[in-house]
Image (cartoon, rainbow, N blue to C red; front, side, top):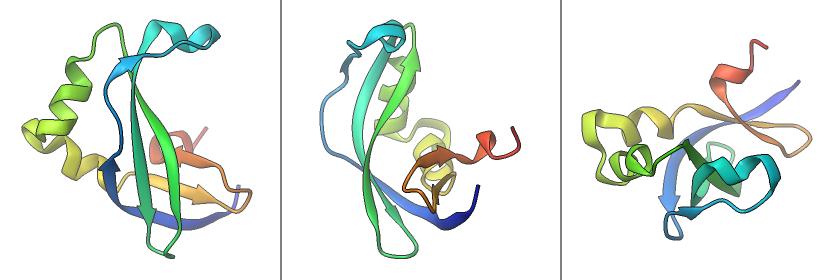
Length: 89
């Protein structure tokens, strides 16, 4: 996995809704646009398991959640967006 950029900000571009596809249907989703330090923008679905509270906390930046998450994504050479915690796996 070759990282080509790190996230610098996240913009909410939709409403919280129940995910509808297969295994993801147990999650709530929030459409966002992630901006990377190389200038690229990628659309992404933030997901929260079980209830939308975590996504609401993200939007309201409770406990600095949005601030922490904005810098926690990476863009791979193949165009895939990953949360930084998955890099070591």
